[in-house]
Amino acid sequence: MTGILLTAVSLIAAASLLIAAIIILWPAGTGPATIDFLGRRGQLDREHATFLVIIFSGALGGVTHALRSLYWYVGNRDLRRSWLMLYACVPVVGAALALIVYIVVRGGLLSAQASSADVNPYGFSAVAALVGLFSSEATTKLKQIFSTIFAPAEEGRDRVPPA
Image (cartoon, rainbow, N blue to C red; front, side):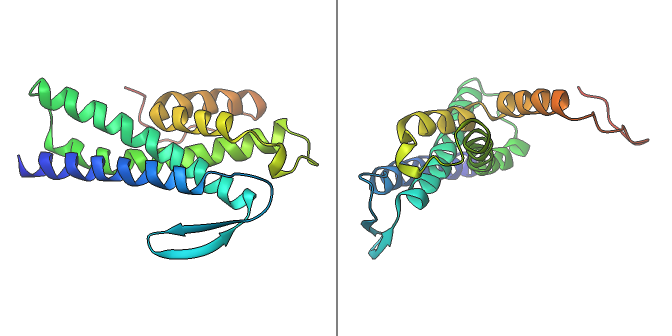
């Protein structure tokens, strides 16, 4: 029970911090912004602010997924202790996948001359949050896309078939 409570409190705290960070770091205007975060003051240009918002949005999607899963399995009395590590990893995976998708989309679909001022942070933040929320589906879709673009990798001798 202690592990469940600690996990829930940690995820709720993480969600709160991520929401606050997204609000504080939201890229406004075209010039550098002065931010005050956790008692530290600094300058941040729009490009870096956008990267951080994308990463935090993906993590927020992952935290949301983890919280939904946690309350579902706890409520149904079907939570396994071995799943607690999953709840720690899902936000990190969400953040990493969101950044990867942002770089792929921004690098492949927008003009190379497009500046950070041309990027809609609402759209990319929404996609990043959805990638974090649905990281399994996002990974599957990315695999499908890249299997179409590139030749599939050879299967090793010790390959484990999908469940």
